[in-house]
Image (tube, one colour):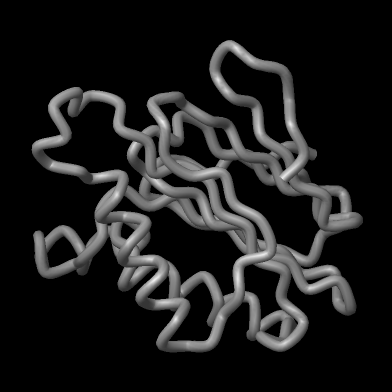
Length: 159
């Protein structure tokens, strides 16, 4: 069963029949987490690095921001029995799509926010596909934790 994780959205599940997918990862970043022991996985698609950019919006859509969405992703996985020490973490996105000049650097800022948060919380990234100027679609299969990407103009690649 395919479950779509929309932009500024998140999904955590322990249903092995689920395939999580998120589309249009440009400057946005997709974070996929998976605990192989309990087969709990989740995916977040965030747009911006810090909730302080728009506190009102962050209160309504916490998954829009790295610093509010990422902690919620992990907390929801822990509620289903996942443990940080077993978590396999994969990230994709952070491209420079609409900002040809690099003026805003949203993709780089999104990635920097993620790295800072992970470093502070001792979270290691198992695999990543970051940057460039392509859109990505990210998949996570909950039966076995396999993840892959579909990159614009290219074939699917394992992540």
